Amino acid sequence: MKRKRVSYAKYGYLFSLPFVVTFLVCTLYPIVYTGIIGFTNLKGSTMAFTDAKFLPSLGQGLWDNFVDTLKAPTFHTALLNTVKMWIINFIPQITLALILAAWFTNNQKKIKAQGFFKVVFYLPNIITAATIGILFANLFAYPKGPINDILLQLGFIDNPYDFSRSATASQLNVSFMQFWTWYGNTMIVLIAGILGINPEMYEAAEIDGANGNQQFFYITIPNLKTMLLYTLVTSLIGGMQMFDIPRVFQNGLPQNATLTATLYIYTQAFSGTYQYNKAAAASLVVFVIISIFSALLFVVLKDKDEAKLHKIIKQQEREYRKKVKLAKQQLLKEGR
Amino acid sequence: MDTNIKVFPRFQPFKVIIYIVCIFLAALSLFPFIIMIVNSTRSTPEIQGTAVSLIPSSYLARNYTILTSKDIFDPIRGFVNSIIISTGATLCSVYFSTLTAYAIVVYEWKARRGFFTFIMAIMMIPGVVVSIGFYKMVYAVGLANNFLPLIIPGIAAPAMVFFMRQYMIPALPLEIIQSARIDGAGEFYTFNKIALPIMKPAIATQGIMAFVGNWNNLFMPLILLTQKKMYTMPIMVSLLKGDIYKVEYGSVYLGLTLTVLPLFVVYFLLSKYIIAGIAVGSVKG
Image (cartoon, rainbow over all chains, first blue to last red; front, side, top):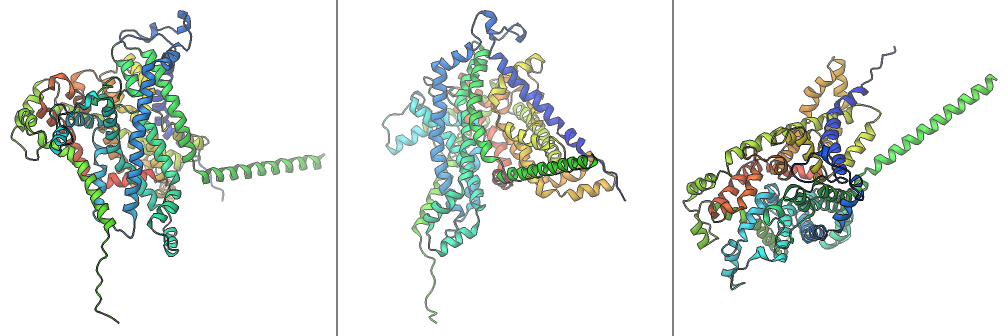
């Protein structure tokens, strides 16, 4: 008996439609819009987009906003600060997370109260970044503040220290907040990664007499490579967009020491002179930088096995079609 | 056999170091919050006297009066606004992400593979590059100071679609859908009545994460909401650093505490799911 086959393909399109429409309206269109603004003279809080003109029609170069942005010393400072504060936070973060993950997954050491430690280490990550920024600004208050108090009582300093006036201290502080809020998250990700490694490898290593350190460097690290790269790239992408903490903590001060790329864009667009065009150009520059990192992640995340399988299927299809074609030609020849 | 030898647990100095480090880090995680909570009950002169104290004082009510008297920080309004936005955006995200994942997993359609690749490609689009165009667009259509532009974009959450797909492939056997079809169920009905309940664990973890993410979001609300009565919790917090509260230390600490408390409650009730969620989300299924 032949059954009538119903095609359900249309539901695939139908059910992904809300996602696609929302993406087009709320993400793609704004990006294109941002891009267009980057080539216009749109600025000031009252200017409508319809009144904006493309730069060439005003006798300026098409890429002037981008050139200006890339030449602006403040933008350089912002990019440099972002990268600097990210590196200062990331190196200790990944190191500590890796060490903790190795300890917590070690079968011989059997660390107790792991659940408690995980919950507490992760805690800062769940708290509003803006709250943490303000909280730390208060903890480091001058002349009277908890940190100054503690340092005075311990005898590390003789007079209260004004952390907010020191560029280095402010940057270190932002880096520390980032480190403090994210190492728990990274640790949990890495623990999941280590638990995913085949336990037989460790058993075999133990039988061969490998000690804890050897197991860590010769089994854990090599097997965690993809995971570490994933952590690195996602952290870098997030770090490039650092905004909440620097904004509420010191709002770029002192002397632009805590000015990040996103904060620069925000300040250009939404305060003072409302230079939407310059801000749009800057955000596209940041977008390009992040896209490069994302491309890297994309290559890493891409399912290699699935890709291989797809290739094989495609090849088989091609061979099948070739055979059909040959068979047809054969038939035609015979027919003649 | 020598039965006299008792086996003592070997003393491991290394293990002691591990515990010291862990306890130190735990203290580091909790210390700022403890100071914050204690100081929210103390008066400004007390805090200026000794900034670090573990003994609560009796100025909680007074601090609250000062905090709310400045006509900026309205914790109840901020709480309600944040709840509306976070709940709305989270519901949009989990429902439509599951629906989109369902479209990718269950149906054979031409663009399916390409669509999934596309979702992975757009996962990392930074909010910054969307912000200026989105701001201008929202203002042009007159939706500034409206919660909708903060809720609707939740429908397109590529990272969550990715997660839902990874979870759905092993969890949702296609035979169930086949049998539902034989029983005459419509496709949309099957999704709502069969797929959604099966996806509950994934929806729970992703929902919590999305809710917290939306709750904590500062950038977009700061751009789109300019009226005081629309302010969310993070916007109100960001105002605590202004000149108005310059000398009211106790009130500032109280304001911070009020924004943290709901998160604490959610976290300590659901930490198990949250931590499991991060672990699962990071490992490709």
